[in-house]
Amino acid sequence: AANPWTAPRPALASAMPVNSLNRLKILQNGLKYSVDLDESDTALSFYIDLIRYHGQWETVNSQSVKYALPGLYSNNTKGFLFVSKYAPIQLNDNSGDKEEISCPAVAEDDLNELMAFLTEEGMNAIFVVAPYEESAQQREQYNYLAKKITDNGFDYVNSNDLYREIGIDETRDFYNEDHPNIFGAEKYTAFLSQYIDRLYDLPDRRGDERYLKWEEGYDDWVEQSDEVKETVENLIKEYNAGIA
Image (tube, rainbow, N blue to C red; front, side, top):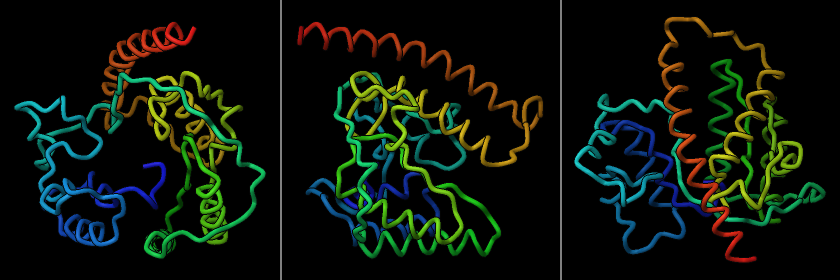
């Protein structure tokens, strides 16, 4: 979620195996500290979650169980979800806002724990904020966290400061206020990959047999993205025709 302080925190466990004790612990703490939950957000709905996280109920079918059982499903697109939706949003330029406000203690504790783990293991990380409809309050929370991140020696970039350079178009590159659509995702991916390539000395894995699955995944990506692009383009045309 683009705004982790107001999102249901059990979603953090979505990528973990169902039989993981760490996942159980995250769910227990997540439910304890979650906000904006409603009557459908029961503990059971998070513990038994065939498609809950970043899924769409209309796609449920007999194969959905594979998402919940460890070892039965490999995502060729590395977790990217193709969404054939479109919505114009209002991007906000908060780059001049230098104020800081603290975030909830549980979020700060999670960040401190993660940075301590990375430091102990001698690992590097880059903390990023993807393009979305960022509010002034969220920016001031990010300012607070950014200082903690950089003070601990890690890199940080808020792409909302760079959406013009990235080429993000608020009139066509999103499907809701929190998520880019296929067009926005491609622009942001290109920006972030180039940024990381400039910042770090990464090995070239092309031609390495151990990574052939990534090439297959790319072929799958191209096929699916072409289909979704056509659908989203039609939605944009329909929207523009409706307001003309």
